[in-house]
Image (cartoon, rainbow, N blue to C red; front, side):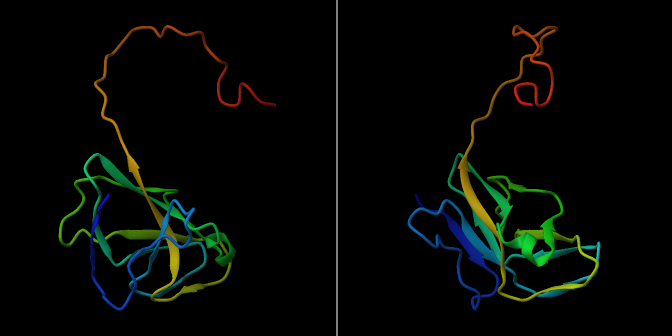
Length: 142
């Protein structure tokens, strides 16, 4: 399956699978920044992507991001199939949860993308649901 990617800075490598079993590709920052304590910053990720038809891109933090004192402010990012214009550069919103400034550099790999198929549904509104109630969040665990 092919996917079109536009790089804004050709000196930063294209995303790639790092191992044969990897399901995600890392994205690198196009710009560095110092993120003040308990603040957010939005940074460009150097790519515009046109996913294959019937797919979307999910953006998720790399598992090592927390070691730097950072997290994605919005948890995950969802990039629709039609968010694929020439200037639709992917961006990340990073939150510094520490009491100290945290620096990130141009080229740092901080997030990853997964290409995921999707299905669209038609909605039918009902007055009652057919299944019994389960008891709320965590109802099957302790």
